[in-house]
Amino acid sequence: MLNYLLLTKSKGINIVRGEAQYVWDDSGKKYLDMNTCHGVAFLGHRNPTIVNALISQLSSIATLSTSFDTPVRDVMLEMLDHVKPKNSSHVFLLNSGSEAIEMCIKIARKATSRKKLIAIKNGFHGRTSGSLSLTWNPRYKIQFGELLTNVEHIDASQSSLSAIDEQTAAVFFEPVQGEGGVIPLEKEFVKALSEKCKEKGALLVADEVQSGFGRTGKVWAYEHFEVQPDVVVASKALGGGFPVSAVFAPEWVASKLEEGDHGSTFGGNPLACAAVAASCEVLIKDEVPAKASRMGELFKKRLNETIAQNRIVKSVRGLGLMIGVELRTNPAATLSDLQAQGVLALKAGLSVVRFLPPYMINEDDIEWAVNALARPLSKLAQTSCA
Ligand SMILES: Cc1ncc(COP(=O)(O)O)c(C=O)c1O
Image 1 (cartoon, rainbow, N blue to C red):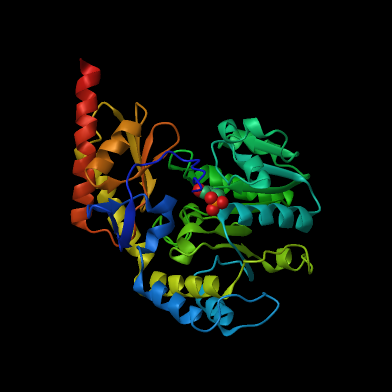
Image 2: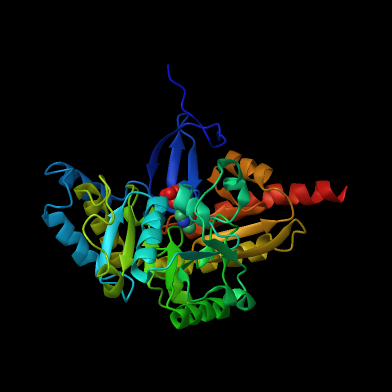
């Protein structure tokens, strides 16, 4: 039998079912899912609105070239209109975050007729060659040889903005750096970044693959920063579990693109359109961003009350339901202990326990997670005292 080429570390459990904020393993053990496949299951596992939309779409047509019109695409566009980034006039669907970033690189270069790309240190934008060039951490790329040229990484500080000049096609940023350690950027920095991009005619591209679609308490995390990026990338939560990503662009960028400039066999397929339309419906009807904001505040408050005094804990931070607990040690043992207690979370950066729960978590779930985290942390604090 073939082996699966496992390029991630096995968690050693066999998950067989998911429902809302919970998953179950093959022994029947229930877990609170705050891993959610890096944030994908933000609208919950098997959200009925999304499942029904997919079943209904499957029973009419599942695959179709984007050259043909089809009603589900119109439904999706109508729904996206309620939540789209303010300045966007067009959307293009792809299948993953990295793919969407690849497209942004191309459209930024074409729309501006410039080559230089800038990204923020500690940022993560994907693992395909172009997106990997924008990803900062050398650990992801050093062994793969030459990537894109004309790429520069700058500090998230106003003094580094002089790197943005008349040769710059685009600046990519995550409003909240996810993989890098759940680090919200400074508001003043993001505002200055936006001003500088405007001044120099460079596109500001918000990578909201992880932070977008309600998770931070607003539909788009950039809204916390009082800026309006030119291009916005969404993925993960956008399809309610169905693999899809989207690039939102304003008229002046879209109008510079011509037939054949980009394409994707699976991008924009009817199932993806149905999933996105249904996800928008859930986001709006269930007031998802407001709920994420409320539960995120409560989660952070309880973390601050319960574990922030522990000397192993460096900080508790995040926006909405994108929360990180930075430790003074590698979080691997803490994550295993959490899993044994039925709480699934994930690592970010070198020392952060990251929680990316579904929006419907309740107060009992939060208590479960906070108490589960307190246990390994107090053990760690005692051992490191001895
Ligand atoms: C901010 C950000 N951009 C891009 C990506 C790449 O997305 P994908 O893994 O779907 O290619 C990720 C993945 O975690 C991400 O967090």
